[in-house]
Length: 385
Image (tube, rainbow, N blue to C red; front, side, top):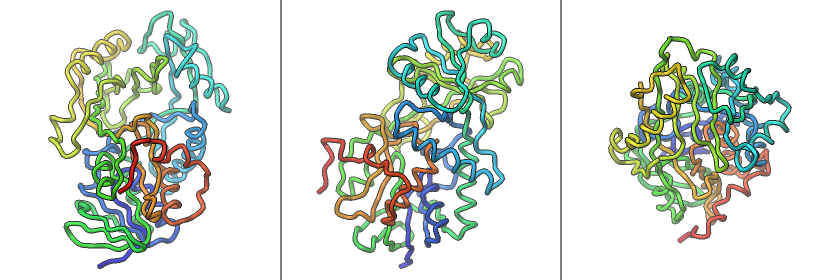
């Protein structure tokens, strides 16, 4: 039986970040992933994710302030483009209250430029995105896109360059807690003093096998891409969020992986998912969801073909009831920690989340005293056998 100081289960962006921080701190580290590298069944694949430095919740703002320089360091160490700053168009029909007002307050409180864009200026600067004359627009400079696949490859290469072991296509079948944890797969068994579990949509069942019943909801989502009418029309287009009082309604960005397309997707409409179900059919959006996207593209993006999507890129994520993360440890076995329930907005925080998971698993004092809002104890139906 092989022994490692740290074993990580789940090779998405959170698991890769955790394993990277472990091996960077000199620990003998193993990362186990049930699918091939860069697979598309989880939450971390794809061309891009939106990132914005300003956040309405203080604990997420603190995480962002730590994550940004860590992304930049990973870029430098691997000579890879991961963060591309484009700025963000923040638009709403109701900016005076709710989600829009709180986020705008965070943007204005940050040290970066946040400017209101009047109707005349919109037409000059962003001719290929239109909205109602009554809508309110702001442009915030410290935002852009993360090249998701590039980030995965960068972490994988650094993990192995620093001496870590990444074993893909190796599914965990059993975890036996103890001072030395035993992790059994279909290939063999491993022992470790520190286990980090980041299994994405498979978290609910895997944690249930350890006695935790958590309110996790695996969810099918889909990134929808639309073809440009004139190639290059959106080459300089920033990321955008169209928001209402309760949250984001539509979001999108230029696609670096699918040249000549722009991702424009409605946020609502995700469906419950069996993560072990059919990879294609179970993850495609409902027809009404696509129709809603078509209407939005037709009304607001005159430079895109709205008849049919160019590409449907299925994705999966895991919601919690309050859409906040869970970062915690088994109560009886604090050397087993887990991160899950990232609810579709976790990717941008991955560098600092992985660092905190590593520190929690190895009983190291965390760099940030910030884990209380992410405790599983906030859910009344949480229990341990």
